[in-house]
Amino acid sequence: MASNTAEKLSGLSIGDDWASSCPNLRKNLSLLSPNEVELAKMLLDVGQNHLFGHWPEPGVDDGRKREFFNQVVRLNSSYPGGLVSYIQNARKLLADSKASKNPYDGFTPSVPSGDVLSFGDDNFFRLEEAGIREVRNAAFVLVAGGLGERLGYKGIKLALPAETTTGKCFLQHYIESILALQEASYKCVEGQDRTLIPLVIMTSDDTNAPTLELLESNSYFGMKPTQVKLLKQEKVACLDDNNARLALDINDKYKIQTKPHGHGDVHALLYSSGLLDQWKNAGVKWVLFFQDTNGLLFKAIPASLGVSATKGYNVNSLAVPRKAKEAIGGITKLTHADGRTMVINVEYNQLDPLLRATGHADGDVNCETGFSPYPGNINQLILELEPYIEELKKTRGAIAEFVNPKYKDASKTSFKSSTRLECMMQDYPKTLPPSAKVGFTVIDTWLAYAPVKNNPEDAAKVPKGNPYHSATSGEMAIYRANSLILRKAGVQIADPEIDVFNGQEVEVWPRITWSPRWAVSFSDVKNKVNENCSITQKSTMVINGRNVLLDGLTLDGSLIVNAINEAEVKVAGSIRNKGWILKHADHKDDSLPEEIRMRGFKIEKIEQLEMNYTEPGKFCLSS
Ligand code: UTP
Image (cartoon, rainbow, N blue to C red; front, side, top):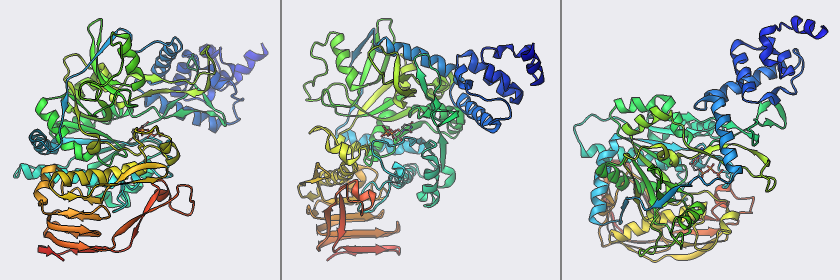
């Protein structure tokens, strides 16, 4: 009787019985708005009573209780189907994980069809040309919401210099590449209306503010601010047990713990942003997805887009040749006993057992090419916009998820720490119908893939022969690719030297870089160099200009050419100076900037020839 009176005084009525299983919530119902009451009902319905277990009487912590519901609103609205779906999906995936269920049960792997490109042959030229024509009909989507925990850089990865000769960060390199492609594409179709190629950057709470700051403090690196759009992904709720009880923050009982959901969020965000329809109406045909630290990618974009355009692929995954058992996912066609098929990335640790279990006694082995027939996925995708929109209308952008709990023991009943559902952008094809045209484009690793993901200590521990994926290897890969491209264009480039930085053995090629407006394709490079040039290993060359022709250059030292677009500069003659030297730096030396420590070297500028052409006209730089 006494408690009934208390309930009446706090405004409760018979209609509040739904909360009877949760007395602490029930006491606080008078504080809640109608919308919050609905959310509270939903949470109890899906077994989340514990979230209110510690709630004190009304009047105590009321502001914190309100904050709790604000977070619930955000978590509920940012997941397709809301928290109910999230919890249901989690229970199913956690049960599958507990039962060690193989996600590929019933599927037989086979090699999908795709295109293997050979840099510099006639087909490559044709595809690059087709890609450049087409790129004016593309939109670029950069996924950059990751924490970068493995790299451990204090800033966002997009702000990291891709290489040291210019110090340009990844974001600047990406934007300049898109602008140069835009220019080159419109040149192919002179007279047509010029629209700007859109760039979307997916950020997260961890990266949104610094990404915006990087853009604004650099005038968007030459893009129109309206050309760039940031879409922020939300984190998802953490889970404490196999019943998907949401985990409360240990330091704040009014806060649900959250963690990133993975780059797969990009599809739901694009869908809900309404951008895809806007793009379609503006004539966009292709959406190119890429990641935050691959300094080589744009060398592979024109030819890969050319493949999409000429083959009519709805989905084109960029890939690199993969050695059997190499720690990189393989692009695989999976056919189910019930007739379903899909072409997707299968993680390397799942590919070998899957092959063995389906009649390939040797598992993941190389074929006659010396490589695995399953190409290595590098997570750069080209999607055709119209079928993409049609698919997202069905799925609302929801992507197949997975869960990876760290169990306390073999009983798999409790976790070492909370877990969450995750999703990957490359799992998009999993829901596509068999009629979808899903292919891949294999491009040499040296040309297409050198991400910066690992800190120096971890990179040094990478087994010999496997890629370091560090700031050191990422930068050296840029010099190597540029040297090899010039070599293939006929320039004599000296062989590299081997050196060790931060415990990583790398090839050191001449430090050659060029701005994207100099060349977006191999045919651009061929048109701008004559075969009568040579560059020594100790040299550095930075070309920052559109109309710079190398004709008769012999370089042994450092040369920097800066030229406005209207200046035509012929670089000839013999240039010799003391140049720029690579000095070893220890990653443990706290007196050095982090950007230097993480690569294990710095450039000491002893002597260089730097030429600046700031007026229109024709010029010749000769010794
Ligand atoms: P990475 O594999 O590099 O992961 O992501 P990460 O989260 O950035 O780094 P670690 O694992 O903490 O060391 C591949 C790409 O996907 C983006 C990253 O920014 C990177 O471009 N990403 C990753 C997102 O956009 N959102 C995420 O939730 C995770």
